[in-house]
Length: 72
Length: 476
Image (cartoon, rainbow over all chains, first blue to last red; front, side):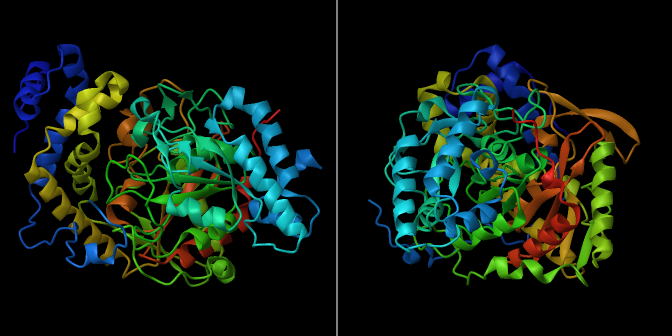
């Protein structure tokens, strides 16, 4: 999987569209390495066959009944 | 006598208190004197709780005088990282937008330690939102490493590690979502223990950005003190959804088991691939010392770990569950470097998060397969020693190519600790030696879930044989 080359402008547009957040170009430049890392991670994880893997989120329907705390 | 009190470990000090050779008030006075002398330089604390500490020390003194000794924590000073709630104090997690966050009750781990008699003397500095390795906090200033004050103490629990290293207190609490207990422990020549996920309640942990990788753990000068704290903190908490209901062993009773016959895995990939040569050589020597103590060394390979550890980027979106609102409402109250990391989390999709969690399960299975061959894994806790405050890239050697490279601290510092968070396995950093330039590094041992007894026993055996913690930083 190819990793697209990112620019501060791409970061600004993505944040505007995905989160409704406006940042300036300087701030976007600081986000750039982290965004590149996220896309590199997507590429690195893609080859792993996880079709039969159960997530470690470990859904447990009994969990809420173990708590003594009340939530509103 | 007062000047020597803080040279003692927690259990040694407890012995003095129990036999009434010293009172908790005298111990507290020694702590205050040390803090007054060293805090202007080291900046380990964001808050000192002098009034409540004095009241509790006087109460402890009176109780002990009446013969109501609660046990070895009674009257011992304790530092608490400032993302762990202490009743009626601000718990800001190193973040400006939380500086009016007064927590009404103790975190469960703190509650248990205080019930056993520990006295909270203050809240320690951390990397902003516990999201980093330097403890160069933009709002509270940098904490300095007592062994090299121009260098970082590690993080994010840098204040706690530096405070213990600097003989300000014998016991401290930290949190570890990617290495934040073990990594500063490594850089500050102290013991840092990350228990099994679910072993210690996380209720009262403020601003945890990835709850499935986060842990509360002790930082101490000796393994026995870590065992003491774990004995008290561990145990089921029905109000923490991640807490697991398992018996709590008498960890201190297991310390003498030694290493004879224990199979220690020595990784052939990942953990030594990128490493400062002095640290790599030092940790290999430490592992050889484990063999001298009777351990059987077994080379192990965990396939694909380098690629799979990219899953941490996929988990990053979880942070937004907590930080979305303040990030939108008060971005100026979050420092630019942390803002950048958090903005990038919006680019992680739901699919990325789900895949990351499935790959995480694969990582857990590969570690489980490894732990069918060995009882412990040994590796450097950090691949580099402490670096100068303000540096961004750290030098190290890529042993796969033989090249010397420089990598950003953001990935380098958690490289070896983060697998323990992804898997939830118990893991400890014990002082492993010093580089030729005098900087400490830690030997990291990791065990199967809930095998903290084995972990502590092995670390204790190594500690007794090497005694690196006896090398004291310049305090005066």
